[in-house]
Image (cartoon, rainbow over all chains, first blue to last red; front, side, top):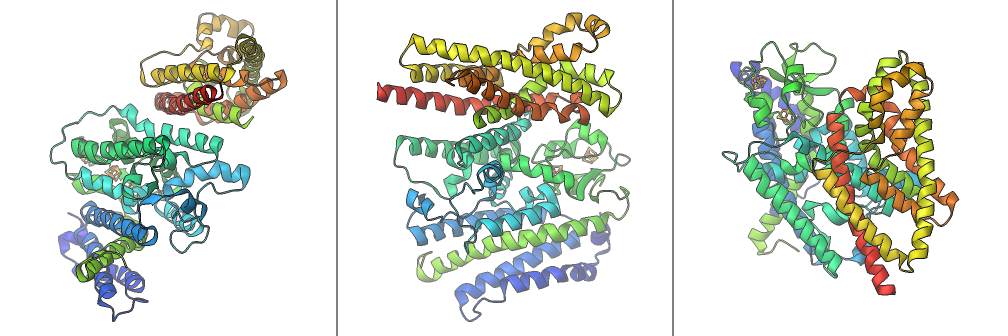
Length: 384
Length: 212
Ligand code: SF4
Ligand code: SF4
């Protein structure tokens, strides 16, 4: 048990939680008309949820347990608020050609790797969104993504990504995995998909992943079904969603869409190289029980990496292996510092940026979803 | 030209994964300094470029020949795309071995390396350039669509540039020591690209049927 949990230093934990209290207070309690209960109640609940989650993480020394609950809830409520918003604005989840021409599509981070070559070659952003739109415009989303990626690398996939939260949610429904052996060659698939979509997007000057492969179109917006082509696209989206986000995670207990398909996840892994935070295994304490290896949701540990005391490049810094290791041999680590020194400092220093971004994005989703649900309870409808 | 470059990029990982076991042991074993490695690598790449240019001429001749065979060229190309895409998928997901011509050098490589050390990387490059793997065949067909020899040469030149991006940093970074995951990426990328070419083939066929 770590120092905080063992000594029940709740006052210290409270002190460490104060900055988060301040940040989330500014985010969720200021600027909201406090007299309107339909807005005040979701804001207060979100504020409390954020701070209780962070306090529990600091106080108990457990990362994965509390992160995961926050992450999954944010993802579910993201879908609620996103769909309600679409129906309010457009009357449908379908995205028509006119909507695209109007630049109404909010920028999805998954599209970022596909923008690079066309932007360099043609100086255009091949995405039907507005650069500075109030709701997920291209520029603010790019800045947010870059900031987070530099701060915590592929931590994106376990702290921010609302799609990853769905994958994680379904994987946690698995009590006993029905499929335990997954050939490690499939972990190369996200890189192959990344290569494929970057090249085809450059060749066709359109975001091919969004047009053909994104499983999450099923629960967000999708092209209006007007032809055989769009019908085929809809079939692909929903099959990928059912297979990779629902069925396989339930059967394997792993995040199969994130670790075996998502090209953005592969791209994001590259930021683990330049990010100062890492997850490391202290070989002196490890007894080779392989529990971490079997339980890692993203196949980010194998026997070789375990022997080398490192995770693979794909590690999403979710903290699960750290929490479950019976010998407490795994820890968050600041690159360049000695392995066994200042473990708690490294963890807290990692939690601040990771959870602040999670609070900003995930907290926004939770607030948005709750607000819709409250509206439904009060007025009988989620939309204005 | 962009098409050729992108196709080169998409097959580069595969080429590297399959030709690396032939190339790297030699490169890493022979060259001591970065400068020596770079010199050997440039001769290897020159050989590879020569191999590609030979293929550019063949691709152009084949394209012209196809023109004389039928006036439904689009449909024929579409059909070949579908065929090759299927082959690419099979190669990406199946347990096939790739006919990298450089493999045939193994036998007399040691002798040649000793007797003609300056020529060896050039020949190695030429043989890895004369490759008949499915992605390469796709490049062959795509280049054959060009009407002039100059365009076909340009296509293969840009295809070469695309694959070269994978070859150049690899020996310097020591990637040759761990090619198995790269091989997986290359194979699966071939499978992913096969879907794109399958779809392009279908569109060409469809377009040909409508216009005929
Ligand atoms: S769970 Fe801990 S003790 Fe077991 S193999 Fe992993 S690091 Fe070693
Ligand atoms: S290696 Fe550990 S921290 Fe990284 S993704 Fe796997 S369980 Fe999470």
